[in-house]
Image 1 (cartoon, rainbow, N blue to C red):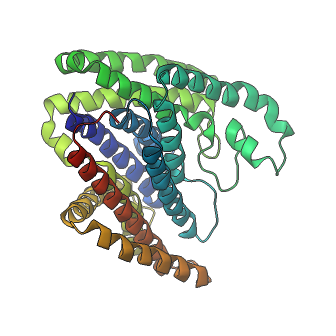
Image 2 (image 1 turned 120 degrees about the vertical axis):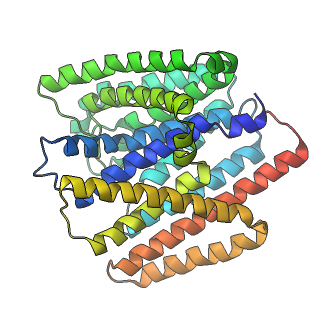
Length: 395
């Protein structure tokens, strides 16, 4: 495959877009929908389905690394990855500051850590073996070691609790176990995507059917466990039924992406989100949810909520694409970085002096996260220009 095709896989962009839709449905559902009254209604199931958005996002992180990198990892390239991770960790802190709290690791921070780990794995000649071994080890930590060790953990065992994932850690939304399984699975899928390009192009319908059929097994397993009295839970710590169910949702979503690419290419172009726009949509969707909350009174009925969610999805995707397109039109990247850094510093200072959470402090967090996203976009443009000047590369 050419370098361009490796960098811009439309199915991957669509997968990000579907994850965004699920994220907006989930967050807006808990903000606006009357879930207490709809506990047995399809609306509650729709909002619950949105809780699988991080599963798909983290999978795309590993998939993207697999497409972008192969072979030996030079220190300059890894340093660039570390720089990106540092910016994502900084943006992650604004997720906590917008709520007036302090935290350790949220959504963007976990993407940062998973990018570093999967990039390191990709540099190995035995990257497949390492990925599979890590997946097995992580699952053992969460579902074998974790239940045995969690009663012996105290408040000072934060790192160990994060590694095991069997107990919730204050300020941590995504423990390593089992969440790191998803980017590793994405990496394996991405490598298979590259290795079997001809087979994939000729048999997308068959592959979609196989993925959909394969999803029946985890769905059946999760249903049996649920019927035995176990619920689905992923907040702070993920339980076994949710993990099993997430595999089914992931497989079915992959099948849907392939089928949409075949039968509904217009939807793929509308929903597909590249890297920068998929990052920008995170703060953008929080801003739009806050704006909607100031205009409507919750809770909303099922029809009103679904209409509101549809408006949010359209507005957020359009705004994130506009942000990325505007960023791409700015050619003076070196000049752009400095005002963006100033914006981030200004927002941090303003938040530091703010005594309480207000709509203005939430807006400052959104502005800061978009500024960090712009810096990441400029870094990405520079890297692509450097590669174009140097010619084709396998790195």
